[in-house]
Image (cartoon, rainbow, N blue to C red; front, side):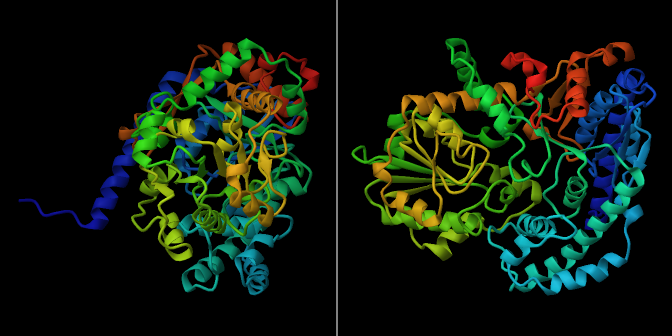
Length: 552
């Protein structure tokens, strides 16, 4: 019998296996699309920096297509990649991107000198949250990284582990900031594009670019598999989720006539969004659930039909949501504990605590097997829940869509249910500003005291008016239909959830059959025009909203 592999040999064998998968994927992608993607026009207008800094081959393929849109507008594209990202460079090369920089090339030991003084002044998480260095939000970025790494909603810097990590991450963030300054001095880009900015190793790049007044654009995934969302990164949008509607965009969408056709489109979007088999994200978050009828839920959860039902849609307590908006509470864990306490004290309503289903796959991906942060928070901050408060764990079989049927009031900080529930005439209470608060269809509180008073009388919460319901529907339609960029030149293809391999979760198919056809593609042309020649905050699908380009 062969001897069992040691852990180190198993890790090496896995790494070789993953490398072989990626090499095969690269060769296949080159054979299929290299001749179409590699050619590029001579640059005539300036330089664009793709702040990639990722090992994800799927992200590189998406960024490669964005690079094509910029190349066709006359830009030379430079990619910032990880120091050991040789494979990433080869992927980028297939898109005609052949200039690369790494932050490590510009790092200086002087960063440790500046970091020492910065670390000495930090005593609490609030100190960390307020900390800025050369215009970069290094404190928030480090705090977000700490929360993510520790899987804790509340980070206590008095703890030895958290303090040690902070003293390691803060100098790294300072060094990254100084390196970003040197990199931008050298590359001198006219345009910067990035995907993720919320963590310590990458966040300072976009902040430094913004501090210099550069044209900076962020992109994130859309609600559907085949979509991306683009937002210009400015002082006005820095604290707003990139999927949001900027004020100008909201004015366009709010001014549209609400027709039966648009209502039908919104209905189809909701059906697709909560179909557990329709999109990759739905399969991740809802793949194990099933629909329950209103009567079935009332029976299974023991809901008193004489009382209204309030549902608390919790966030992933340790995720990077702290960047988007102003919170009424110190952090998401404090919000969760205080909300559960208020629920326990108000017996005049049924309460359901719905823990976020993304906990399931995020914790599995991280290899985390410890106690859920929410369960720890309830045990330490509240104690045993009374009978009128029901807890739904992240892996519950009850789908979120089914819960809507018994929800009389929704409670969140800034989760998507806050803009969805009012579309169905259900009021939503928020505990902080977000990408939809203040739009006229949510119940927003100015302080934690006001928020907690509303929870204490949640059974008195008024229903939205017909005007508020229409506003909510226009807003949701704007997010789903106008803010999502649907490409005709490319398509994202995701693997089945149970077969997702670590090297990549998805790939990109390209439909152009020649360099000339790619250069003439309308979708890439419109994206490049907005990125380079416009200063509109949002990239809206003007074909969907039906307005002139100058308005967008």
